[in-house]
Image (tube, rainbow, N blue to C red; front, side):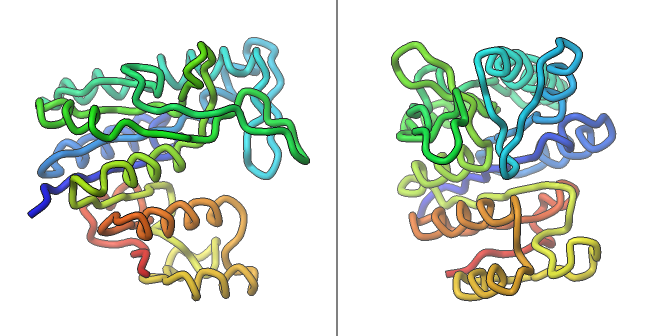
Length: 257
C-alpha cells in the first residue's frame, strides 16, 4: 500500500495576511503523514514592485515578468514569503525546508514561447524530481516550495504555483497515495462567485466543460480545474478545491474522473 502524501497549494492572499496565515499553518501542521506546501505571493510582489517604482502588468490574470519584475518575484517568493512560512512552521515543530525549483534541481522549466503575448521570464514546467522530494520527506523534512523554477542554464523563471503543485503531484503519484488541495478564499468551485453557499461539491470533466460553456466557471478557476483533471489522469488519488480554512478535507469541491 502506498504511503499517504498531502500536497497543499495556497494562494498569495492567504499567506500574506496574519490571521489567515496563522490558521493555515496551524491546520497544516496538524495534517498527519507526509506533506508538501506550495505557495504564491503575488499581492506582496505587486506591493513591493510598486514601492520600487516597477509597474505590474497582467494579461488574463497572468503576470508579465520582465527582468525587473523577476528580481522582485525572486526576493518576495523565494525570500520574504517563503522564509516567513518556514520559520513559522519551525515554531510548530515542523522541520520545513524552503525551496525554489532551482534548489537541488527539483523543478526544471523552459521559458514560455512568445505567441500572442510575451510573458517574459515565465516558466512552463518540464520536469519535477519526485524521487529527490520523496527522499527529503522520508527524512522528516517538509518542503515549502515557492513559485520559481529554472531552465538548467542559469535562468530563474516565474512559474504559476497551481502548475507547480499539480506537476509535483503528478511526478510523485507512482510512489504515494496523493491528495492534492488547491486552497484559496472561497469554499470551493461556486456556481455564483458572489454566493458562498452555491458550492459545487463534486465536478467531473464533462460537467466542467459544460460549466465553461454556460459561463459559470471562468477566469482563473479554469486553469486551476485543468490542472486538477490533469493530476487525476496522471494517477493522483484525490484533488480538492477548498477554502484555506478547510484543509482537513471536510468540505470543498472534489474533482472526479
